[in-house]
Image (cartoon, rainbow, N blue to C red; front, side, top):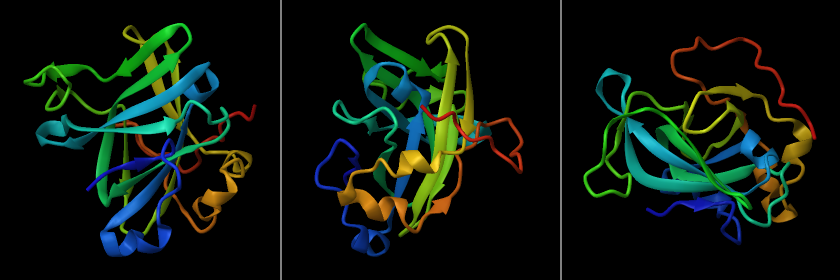
Length: 193
């Protein structure tokens, strides 16, 4: 089954989500605000001992023509996922925020790479439109950086094109979690731009 993301036009067939066993992830990152023309996330599935393995699926969370305050979305098969790498394509080059690698993949493309733990995790159910919040990455890529998750401001959801208005309608608010941190009852809202 293919993956559709916000870089695809037209949007997903929301009426068929449940029957195909898929859901929609709606998410934003601080990289949207950091001069990135394109933001992608590499997905992983959990394996033993909290480790994750890259499944070779990358979703576009910000397309080249999307405004910074518009969240991205991706249609995914229902399930639990981790994000092991965020990539920012900008005018100054590429920046990569990646989880620590435990074992490299076998063919150099990242597929099959085992990570100590994903940067964030999320769950999408069949027919769900999941508002997973805004991932905040602070610090320098490939060095020391931190990850947190904030609620997505309603104004950002309103920036979705009218063709995707169903994505900002009935939705489940289920913010991503950072492994190793206890979930908090109140998650702060990301700053509005």
